[in-house]
Image 1 (spheres, rainbow, N blue to C red):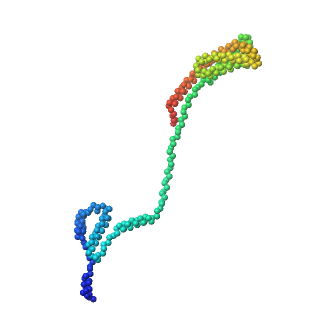
Image 2 (cartoon, helix red, strand yellow):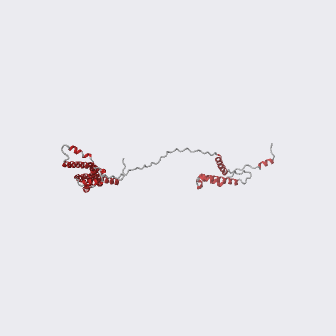
Length: 310
């Protein structure tokens, strides 16, 4: 069927889709940028952090210009602007939401290897024994030993004096000399002065100790007097004195005061003390030297200080 002229006019007046208008300035700008790249570029475009923002701004400006150019056309569809900011918010929300829904797990850490505890080495104290001071060597024991020899000599001399006096009196002959020599050994009158002499000699040696020989010479008379008293005491034991009256005892003592054996005991006691005392004094001098040397060695040890033996 053929349409009427009115229909033809109505078809002719129907609007045709308009082509998008091109901005001449923008086209010239793009052509110049293609011919000379970087001429119209700004420094911010070279920074990557402004690229996204510039692209978005350029896109929005282009869309706005395009919208203005098509504003005259009422039928043109509005330009569509992509929701960039909304997409970023959605992405951020998705990231946070995924993080919120993730189950938190506590993973125990691996046990650390136990390191051996090394105790600090403590230095042990070293004890050093201090040297002891030397003990002084005494001479009393030596005096006692030498006193025994002096006592033996005193006993021999005293026995000889007894036999001599009895021989002078005619009591001893060649026939009974053996019995006469053994007879005094069985009496108190012989052994009491001998024992008293030993005690006197040893006591004097204990008193003098390491003294010089001159002390023995001076104090030897004391030992002689002790031996003299021992002779009288022996006569009292021989009596015996516990059976005597006081008068008889005094008469006996008076008879023995100037008896030849009493005088002999005094002389023997003094002389033996002097000569055997010289022996004791020599030993005492030797002990004095040893003591002095030990003291010097002790002082040297103290000055040197303690030493450790390796």
